[in-house]
Amino acid sequence: MSRLGIFVDRRTLANAEQLTALIRCRDTAEEMGHAVDFIFPVDIQKIRKTDALFIRARTDPMNVTYVAAKMAQFNGIPVIDDPMSIQVCGDKVNMYSRLLRKGIALPKTAFLSKNDLTVEHVATLFDRMGSPLVLKEPSTSFSLRVERVQSVAEFFRVARRFIRLSDWIIVQQFVESRYDWRIGVLDGQFLYACKYTIPTVTFKIQASVNGHIVYCGVDSIPRAEVPPHVVRLGIKAANAIGHGLYGVDIKNNNGDACVIEVNDNPSLESGEDQCYPDVYRKIINHLFTK
Image 1 (spheres, rainbow, N blue to C red):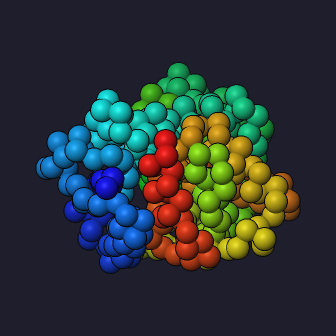
Image 2 (cartoon, rainbow, N blue to C red):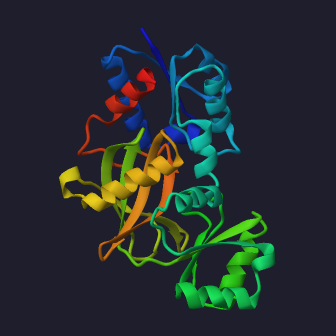
Image 3 (cartoon, helix red, strand yellow):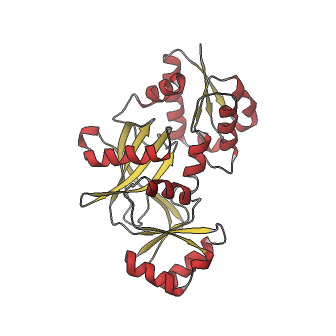
């Protein structure tokens, strides 16, 4: 009997939807004949006793999930997500650079260092990309430190705050859309598709508005109803990052699809997999056949 480790933390279990998804993953693995252990950070040494590891806590190169991934890799244990994917997706300068090198369609994108923050340079960006612009701090996740700016003065107010956290700022063209496609990809193969409907009070899939967190709507979409070029772009973008489990966010404005970002080890607890009941079976098969 093979043993699957599912790496979790308190935050993972604090949400009823996440807990339900974890139980569904465990039940699937057991139905397939595997033993399952939930491994918390305090028990990280137990990773060595597993045959495969599935990380279901927020991945970040600066936290314990990266240590868990490295421990699995060092011991020859298949892991989702792998350390390289965590590193790349945790640094959006690295991620977007890889996508650009592979010719992946993106909004117009620029990387700015502290020395680039001049009125002349910023004015040129507005001329080239239009208004508004979207500024991102490279380590952002869940739409944190992603802001839309309409003027040079507003740009500098946000940029000065972000540059204290990173050596670089990402500037992108704003693409108008009421929803994002999310294409799930596993080892270069289509896994699932859903739509994230953006709340009318913001331009992001998650935001704090008047002190309250608002979330996007999630609708699982059968593959036959997803534009084929969106699926192709999602797979191509994921392959530019690696061979793990990715959620690729895509805007398809007037048929011109572009990648907004690639997320390693994407969430599956909000109904993304409703039309794809075999998602966990495919992930577990992948882990035990690597």
